[in-house]
Image (cartoon, rainbow, N blue to C red):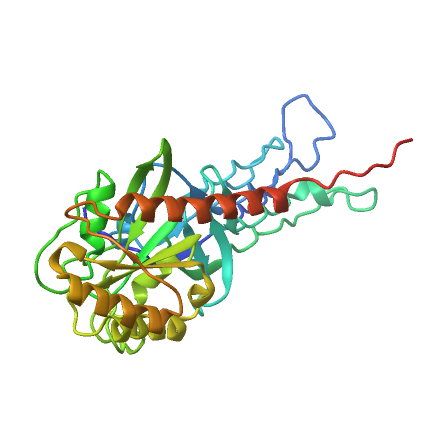
Length: 346
């Protein structure tokens, strides 16, 4: 299945049904009068968050969604049937943006969440509605109300607790494969990872979700390489794990390059808690390891962690450090969502 995280969709709600002009005419029954029914409401357009989806690939093949037109009113005071709604089913983490691609309409973060995008038109009144004491035989009825239409953008942002960032070939996919059951593509050339990946990490009888995105290079915010469009998938993460290739020429310069791209992207990534780790430690001799750690320490202003996904050196320590920050953020979120209790008593 292809991974698609952006889609442009045209939506339109249904028109309301027209009211009817009708008069009751039955044999042996006098005083018939108007009996035209109202039209039915047009179908609305909803977006619903569902489980079991992890991509927007469905919207590559269908970009138009329309609610059904309401049924027209009929004689004998029969109201037209309401039009069927159109429902857009999206995965958890999808953002609904307006046509300007900036205005946020809805953020779908919980399964079962439903948001109304376009309301169906009201049905028109039949002539029975207009009957009065001075106008007992009205011959007018309203047409149905027009539906709404708009163009929206769907943007998927994966929901994970921790995110991996770094230059290409920094060992992100190897770390994901070593700590989760995910099987990302791993090779000895840049940009092996072309789409984001998710994995569930199990550490000390605890679990958290780890996201891996394609590597960044200098100028990614200008579209160089794969660009920075996949950075949106780590915007929701509580902590970032920044991996620096220990076999690179200068670990400090590699760190600064990625940090510059995160700052240029925005989205609050530069302010997120960050754990810096020197990867591929098994491929370094003691002197080179010491030199790269010193360079990285000067660049990030703190002592980096050292790990090797191949030999598992330092991996448990890194996972525990990630869990500590994730737990801290979870506690803060629970406190923020907890109801305020008052000591007042009647």
